[in-house]
Length: 272
Image (cartoon, rainbow, N blue to C red; front, side, top):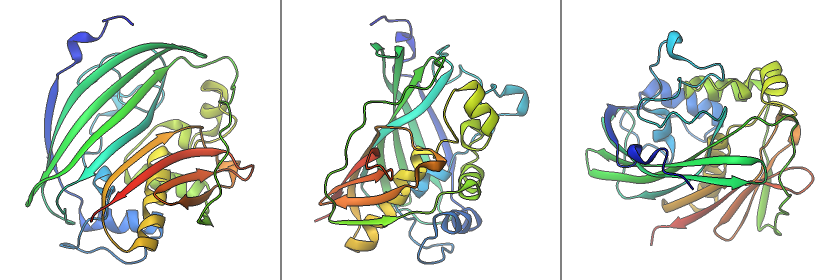
């Protein structure tokens, strides 16, 4: 490991935002949430992710559809960047339309050598405050890697026998709508020529946060109580053609391809 980006560790930024009723209704439509969401309603777990959407002008965008490197995050030159996973604690409720204040800190930058070459991991911590005080404590893991000459899938991880499972409809319309409501212009999710010819994927990539939200929603529908914690990690990219299903075994959740390979795995902790 080198200390190339050591100066970025400890950097902070603060921002305010809210999830408007209109945004909440759009996300509910995209996720096919069980009920409509109006101003003042509790904000479902993970829905704060549609706050603080990028405001970068077109002149500041990189070719992959992300804001250009630099600024708050370190300017890692590796071209492929992904939200690899995260950990959350839910401490107090948030509500639709409520002002949310977020303080973000770069906690760690680590460089590793993997089977695909150089990898740089950036861990960002977020503390989200609402009217009731500190509502969410979160860490996000962002990984940067070089774009390979050809796509080589990770070693497959077989899903365990589930207590429950359900199919989930993933098509280009849902990918587009999720990109739109999160204002995520990463082209691997909607631009097939870019995804296959530039980043060398075999198809359009299903958003990791979309999978994490669908798993959370499926778990909540069965437990009917609020979570206390949530951890998720991408094990394998999920593609549009994978015919995903959601499944759970105890507190462990995952998205699974029709061949039985895990794509996103998660673990949920329930409030007492």
